[in-house]
Length: 545
Image (cartoon, rainbow, N blue to C red; front, side, top):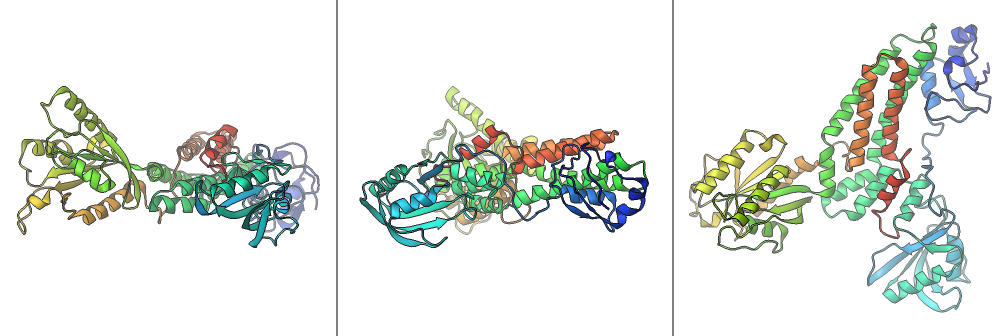
């Protein structure tokens, strides 16, 4: 039985007779013969001439098949236009400066011609095989270098286009000569920042989340950042979003089918209940990820760790010890630090912004009091507080006041009610009698440290690792983290749309809410992304990547 699709986008206008709906639809395959495409509201179109195996399937299941890609294993292009996509680009892909080997790459239709021009009279090397060739200037014939060259014919290349690579010696004169030679080849131009990756995205080689993972991998400075970037580059966040989108597609198909065929006897029982159940489960999953959203952003940009304590407790010494450089001035005179000094550090494999603050005390001069005000302001913004006390002077008024105003509230819960964490460090343990009792048996759990001798540093770093794993998330385990503000924005938009779905009584509005939710998920991986957003993302790349 063959039924042509009408021009109307609504399923209720399909030219199906009562006999077709009541009997034949469930027992036969429906070939779609007309060259029109089928629309479900704002859902993506599906290629024609797809045979739907409807045997043993209900009508919503058939609609889900229509909404699925006919080739699910094939990555489709993003549809984003590439600036100057007809040109062939070239750039130095390795770092600038003297080095043993420098990598220069090209991408575009003239890559093969460029490779032949610089290695004439030799032909192209075998695909994806390194060959040693003499490079010469295509106009003067002057030898430039003896280099390894590789040929990557599209679409099996990083960008999806014809690509060539020149592995030359890394001297500035050699690199400059090869770049000038490529610039003399007709049809070639220097690449813009991030243009190679942008072409890979446009040709469907990378999703937008994978592009962001690649950028994060290039800029990774700690082990935790590297692990997280690799997971995102491997597509874990994209796969998660695609799974959520499939759930919404199924729910939308059920709602659309109920709208169009709800008055007939062709739908199984509980179609809407099943859609509602799937939406509720998705709401819980999205809510859990949004609650952890700040962790991924901290992992990418660094957690804010504030070192605080009374004057002369050794805060600046601790900052210098953790950063392994003289960031702060160290002096026996109290009140030396009067402003907030910040430095990015790698703490136990996690990125952190370490802040040295003025000693917290009352009755100082106006300049120091401004420093104290700024220190308290930083405490309110901290992700983790390193509370430092002098182990040999715990009974002093300044130490007791600090314990009461900063440490004790953290022991009862989160200081300031914003989820901060605190590690109590008793510095100057070298001044304590050797083998003596714990100087502070009544304090909350704490760490003994001597910034002078380094004793206790390993224990502090291990404690920092555990705390930062909670603050930033462990990139080695658990679901993929949301590392960018735009991820959080679109997931929140998706959750808000699902909230409208659950509240509305109008099925048409409910279907529209599901479409809106799917749109937010699509924008995370690059579908329907605005051009200006893409420009910002690809500006993170250097020229040659």
